[in-house]
Image (cartoon, rainbow, N blue to C red; front, side, top):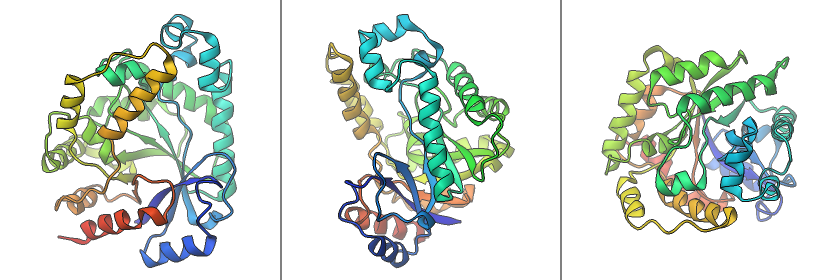
Length: 320
């Protein structure tokens, strides 16, 4: 099992880092490398050999744009100009181009896997915990998108599908998981199980012990499908009380999409804080899955500023 840390490959965000410093820190913490997400100009401090995985670009709200549902887009964005500003393109093909650029980056750095979010949620849904699409719709749209993206390709890396707690792949229903895996045609496909996102699918759990017990039940319920879990994003805490408080004090929806997006982003930071998972049962959860890649997916842009949190997570994994 490779132990990794997430990082944003961006020259400005890693301006305080050096290649020697990153390598020294990884070695000191007995980490095997990083899972990178490409953002803007690459950082010279991040060496290709340290990048084991690549988290692909994502838009939290994309299915209506992909399907060409102009009525839904205008309801959410107000104008087609706002739509273009959000997606950076005027047609669904532009989304494929953005992902192709990330796949080229993953191939260039020699990544062993890439990660794709199977989810769709608008700011309105985030702020009201409502649903505009069924899981099946998001899963089918994601499979369609991925099949076009990977058609005719034989990349040297695996495609790992990540769960979230919004409409799409949640890792709470084996039938939906099987539906997703059966529809994606790329042969080297597996699952990236995100513990914090799985906790988010259980808002009734009010402490971390309950969340871990819930996660272990969901994994057990998946039976032989667990063999598809090749990686794990490790982080999380119980946020059921936070969700209840946010919904009780929900703000009025801002009139513009950009303002609503900011409202939703601030909520998500509270619901999904990407903090160390330190419950005594964390090692048992990891052992139950036995992933090939264990990414400590913790909040923060650089590595040095997150060293304390990384060490806290590593100590929790070592405790029995």
